[in-house]
Length: 118
Image 1 (cartoon, helix red, strand yellow):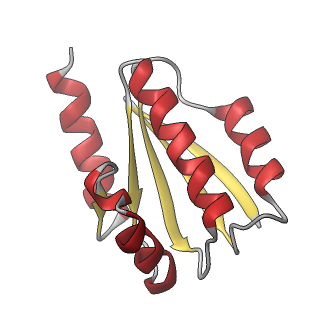
Image 2 (image 1 turned 180 degrees about the vertical axis):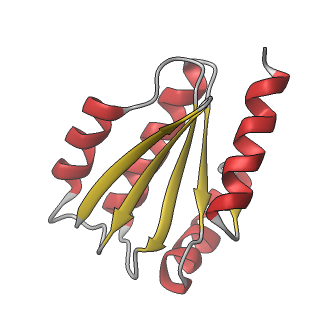
């Protein structure tokens, strides 16, 4: 798994490439701890390069979403591939974390949300 981030006005984008599973959960947690959005910021995960995710990856995303919400921000997921999308569907994540078809849609929605909270 490789991770990268981009700071945009009011939004942080985390780009994940590769499988998100128990073998790299610690890597993802450490990266998020180091690069997590500042309080009140919107965080978008670009999952377009994630072909597989198990419950470990899901758990990290949900913990991140909870942390962001406590600080006045939110997490959005973008360009989710079929297998992770199925995991989100069967676990009910879709009712708690917004999922967008494209990264552009997610960033636009995150910016709009940030503007409303100002």
